[in-house]
Image (cartoon, rainbow, N blue to C red; front, side, top):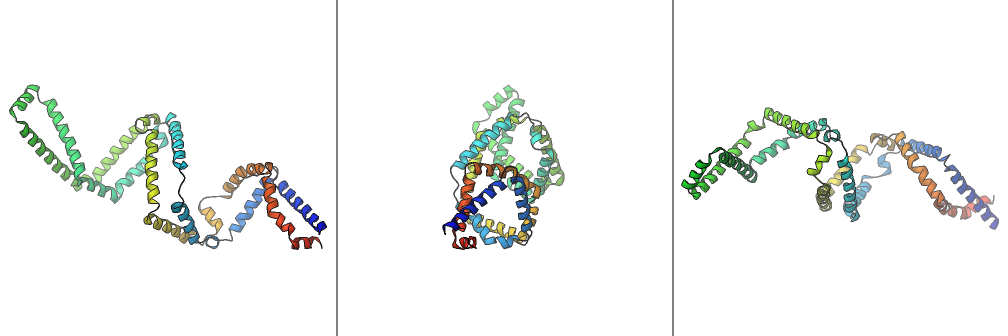
Length: 327
């Protein structure tokens, strides 16, 4: 029995040494390439639906999207990242137009003017009493400023002396009511949203963009600082933490998983890889970039050998294995 166990131990040592040799720096690249080709070949024989079910993915998606509570360090990490991104981006000498090209802005403006929601939104604004009051107040202030500057001082003084304050206050209220009515009528006029007028609005937006695009990114400090960005993230993060627990989100998440499986369940794993745009060259490049350094560290720390022995020692200690060695 001892003799058979010694043979098993020698075989185990030889097998571990063989794996170490296979993963030596001069050989590991070829091993990784060969293993990748083997896996891709097998992936042509297996479909997504054979390997995993929609229910399994739904449960996993729900766990990470709904049940798992994100650690408190995430907002802090995001805050630090935003601070660095902001400082690095602001210090550059690039213009705004070099970061966001005009074609993107044109496509976005055209789409916003095209969708019914935009036109309905403008119509809703025309019926919003708060907005109408603000616009009327602004128009009234402009009118008062123009009269103050255009009417000679002696005439203004005469009016102030001759017209009682309560009359002037009543006149201002009537003027404001009239302005609100006129603005409501103007904003509700279908002519305002005709294709010609929307085209003029499009040109106005693009002219404004062309001027803004020439400004350096550094000027954005005056519009938005890093603290503003972090606060916006916190607001969005707090919304997400509440929204992810709603029934609506869970329903939409399940619908998304079902849609994915309806489309891809019958595809082979290789076809699925191709569908998302990954090529053999992409996968091999990543394997060669991360694999050899990671394996080398595991070998240096003895962790690779420990893992191999933990997996193989039970096999070489089995009576069936020892019986084979006895033949």
